[in-house]
Image (cartoon, rainbow, N blue to C red; front, side):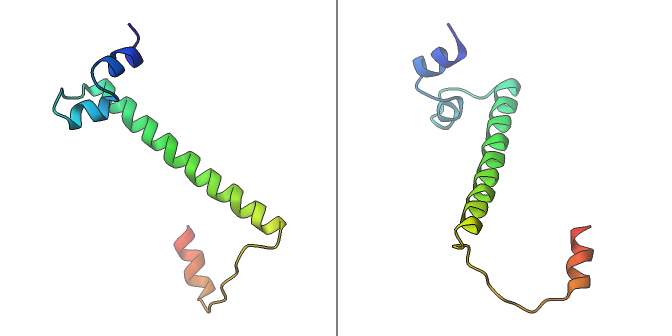
Length: 78
C-alpha cells in the first residue's frame, strides 16, 4: 500500500494522525512534512509576487508614499 493509502487508512494526513494521538511522526515523516510546508510557503510568496506584477500591469497596485533613510535601507538589505 502506498504511503498516501496508509495515511487515508489511518485517518488522514501524517500531521492529523499525530495531532489525534494515533501515532508519532517518524523522522522521515517530519522531514517530509517540513519540506511540504517550506515548498507551500515558497509557492505562496511566488504567487503574491505574481499578483503584484499583474496589478502593476493594470495600474491597480496601491502605492504608499513615506519618508525613509536610503542609507539605512541599503545597510539592512545587505
